[in-house]
Length: 439
Ligand code: ADP
Ligand code: ASP
Ligand code: MG
Image (cartoon, protein in one colour):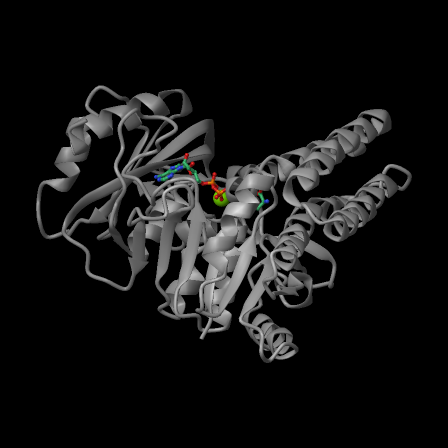
């Protein structure tokens, strides 16, 4: 049975950090190690793509050279043997020549996806060479040979299971595999990805596919904290979360986990452990099929939300009206996050504005429509039994000075959500830190 260990961008962010990973990977337990790109690389690749879309070829070429300089430096610090340095130099030359080749061609979304894949391809090969230099045997598992999404951009689990096992079988004695997070193929067989932060998702999908004993997400903080440490001053790590609690936090903005990364692990009941590479002795967070203590555990915020208010004094209560509304969102493949209704209106939120124009046009055919963009969902998560009073009270009391655009309570026993204007996010998270966690 294999463990799956995922190391994020900061954990492979420099030669020294890559060296520090060896101790986690060469213990006797068989492992599949999933790596992100070195931190900053995917952002740099996104910038290169933006320049290429804008046909700013000189700018793109300069950005490619700047990124290459970083890798030239890192490999000098990483390897000491001439043979490894030579191999790494060749690898970097190949990948950067490949990047440069896009400056000469037409640039479309397919080229963009191929460019974004370079970071993970580089980090995994560099780590594999480093293990080799240290005398540790490992094998590279090419994610593009088995990670696949379907026509709805969902992981194609049957395909992944079959081909991941086939890749593993090519090395029957091997105990240590290294593979790329984030990258995959789409339904057309083209290179694609699992969206930003997607390496967590890769780890959980692989864990589910091979029925791993545990998925470990190693990052730069000691687990899931009760609030966003980038925004509020004082936070603490949470020891245990149920799958449902963790899924809500990830989906509603806790950046430590990719939004949908808990689901594959939950489906196969595989525990997910969040650990800190800089402080490996810290307990971190265990996410599993457990009954955690009652109470509020954490809050998270998701930005870039659009609220849509749909008003129809004649039709709202009419049979079939809500179905007509939902069908419009379904046609545009746009998921709804929050929803609140009154007798004459329904307010709902979406986080994907791509088809807002079409959605609004169709909604206007059946009702009056108002749009508020730049909203933030604040999600309060824990074990909050609906039959006990007090939880909604506590939350509303903590937020008493902040105007709330929507409140959603009772949908699940794990979540209370409120919608606030984006400009009030910090204030709301601070108020909740004080009101719910006494900071
Ligand atoms: P990686 O590169 O390892 O994937 P990320 O940057 O994606 O790491 O995620 C880790 C970061 O998530 C932390 O450094 C922290 O700032 C941020 N973060 C946001 N919300 C939380 C939270 N509730 N608990 C822990 N970390 C959080
Ligand atoms: N490298 C990708 C990103 O920066 C995936 C990941 O790090 O999880 O989004
Ligand atoms: Mg991440």
